[in-house]
Image 1: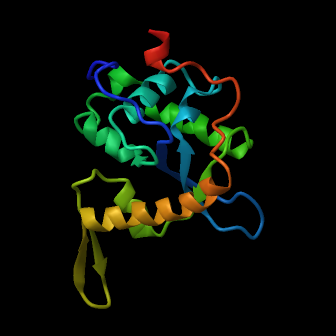
Image 2 (image 1 turned 90 degrees about the horizontal axis):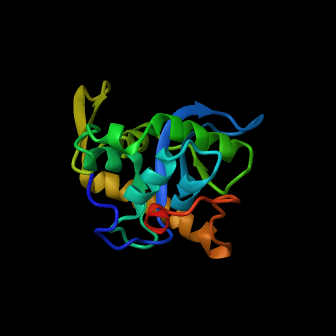
Length: 180
């Protein structure tokens, strides 16, 4: 893992992650993907120091307003080989979902279509192949399609964040670069 102090930090970065689908209430659409502000990873109800380490990785060298899928972090960590050094991302995701479902932070809860969800679950240069049985052919979706999905999520986020910034929760722990 690169040195925590090596690159500039971006504010207003967002983590996008897929998860097991759930229905937040009767007659609601399935939620299978969630977006939270990066600072939510520093919430005291997120397993620590794992959340703070992921926050450090997520904000290092990014552009303000950037949406980073969890799969991008996995890609940057050598296809996941570096996760043991950073932390237990699965536990962190479960903790983030608990925060979202208990309204302890702001989030954008999405029900992405199957292909869009698959694209954010792959690395930035990966492809997703889908078989169309009616046409008896495969369709290949790649990085440009993934970028379009992230752009659409970003447009929706922009509308929400224009009303007020995403609230990451209360009592946040300091970032690694401030606690070192």
